[in-house]
Image (cartoon, rainbow, N blue to C red):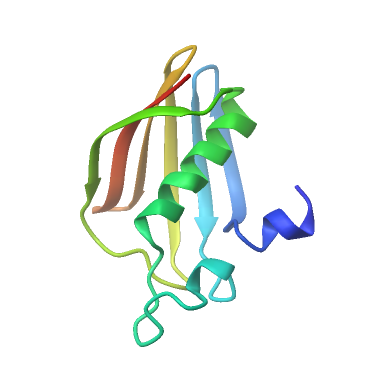
Length: 117
């Protein structure tokens, strides 16, 4: 990815990849563009950014293609904050569907099902 894209994406520390599954260890750097102008008093990763990251990584590591048709069962349980290290699990369910989940040990941050067109 180019430097422009890297300004929007968290740092990848490690990737475990299987046929239809990717487990990505991420560090959410405090200097990411998503923190600029969004809740200046208490920086958090916006939900739409979490979704965008999951889609970007599903495209890159699981070869999923297309625009988003539907997002369902979208849940935000805890806030993702600057300088956190979390796991992102992406599971390909079919040629155009996947699930994702951000978590760390016992903590679950967000999850959803995504269908592409």
